[in-house]
Length: 326
Image (cartoon, rainbow, N blue to C red; front, side, top):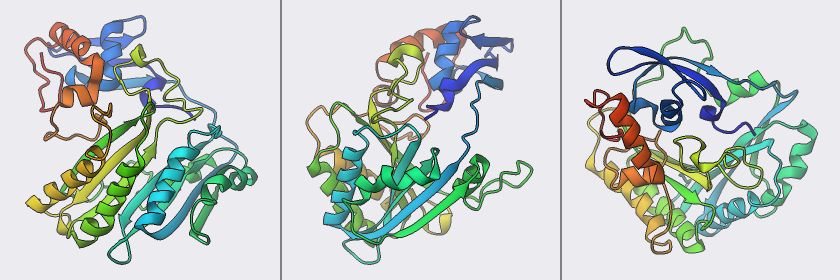
């Protein structure tokens, strides 16, 4: 409904590599303003951001529909979700599917969760075509209230009070996939993905989850922005998949089996997709083991980002494994 946060940015105050301070916007230093919206960590230290705001919707509903599904039903459910979001869904509908360990080997926990920012009375009619493709009687939670209530609900146990302590320690490995609208996930890829989670996922000692996050589909404000408007290149995706596994008890060291498990999730999808499938990866799910990250994260924008890096940080002060290289 509102697009990416980076699409709301009007200006950024930045400390450059040489210690000088600049303001970047469409009219001041527009080249680095373009780069900061999608690759900011490579170019400087942001000290403040001015953003465009939106009126809070009069109603907000956080919804959850949870199932314990076998491979066939979960595969059909994910396929139905992919088809549903390509119909004329309202922009007020935002959702993802969360997949986790099922009740027994061969099953997965399957939850449709999201926010509905239209009139609460219209949610049922909007989501009914999707739910009709899934088994009856899911465990259902509907939290209807103000917009700020929805923010609190989606924050879970975390307080909105910024004076509180940060989140608990975690030791994890995460990968991502961004699926192209021009070539949605195939039936074979979906079946292999779910089958892997239902069996290898059940046997794994890792604490894991997979999120199939809606980025595209009909009426997406994310994909309504031109590809070259910002450094974020993935303006023609349907889903961003976050594939995440924590070490047992969230403590180090991270076991080698965790890397193998998460890499296997990705491989289950890619190896069952067409050759040269034009998928991407999401830059904010940092993966310093990712091969060909320049293309997967930044696509056709990488050469332009390198040119801007050479101008603003020629000594590569802001260096990290998946950062833009001078």
